[in-house]
Amino acid sequence: MAEDSSTTKKRVLVIEDESALLFALKAELSHEGYSVDAALSGEEGINKAITGMPDIIVLDLMLPEMSGFDVMERLNADEHTKNIPVLVVSNLADTEHVERGKKMGAVDYLVKTEHSLEKITELLKKAIEEHV
Image (tube, rainbow, N blue to C red; front, side, top):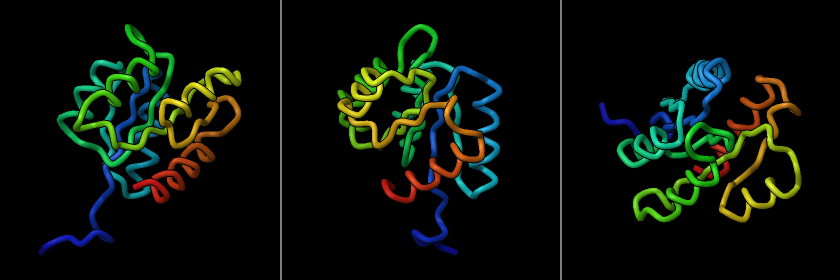
């Protein structure tokens, strides 16, 4: 049976180095019916974005080896990934980081410490529905 757009699972890539949050987000989004892939580093996330072509990327900014801003820069420079919406979820709450993230093309910027896991999941679902 062929799947139509209403039954096709939307693919979400979560790039987050805090393993507890990564797996909690993966579990919550999977429970909500999304197909979720995960990466613990920026380089792994970029590779998964290129090979898996997710519908949306959830990106932390504080990652080992390269920042989330570096990840966004590389995704924006790649012909295959430049149009994938990116939702930033970070502990960096200052205006400078928020503005930089949005200027680089983030569809939204959520500060982890300001929201519960349930609220982050709710906001992610809203962003996915709006931008995918």
